[in-house]
Image (cartoon, rainbow, N blue to C red; front, side):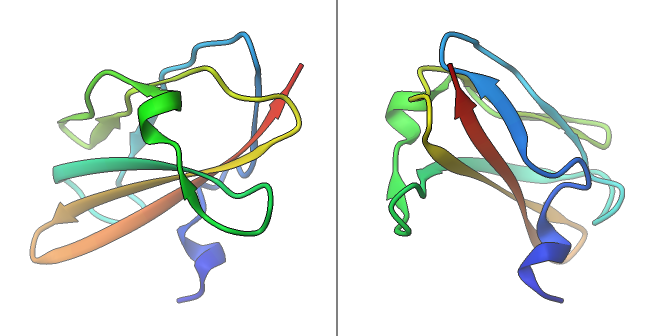
Length: 105
């Protein structure tokens, strides 16, 4: 499996710098009944991976049924690119799903 297999099928999400969005991830493409969900946000604009979770994520991650509800995504910088990584367990396997984000004005 390559990294592209872990990216959400909707691909890059475009979020305005003034928007505040809560996403839900249906885990059935990877596994059902997710547990131990964790979310980390990175700014990848300069080609690195700078953890910006404290700045752009608000609230907690939760799982119910086959859906993981992410913390609110907010306070993005227009023109920057972000990578949201969602880690969860399904059965005896651990998965990491990627949501690419491009911030706009």
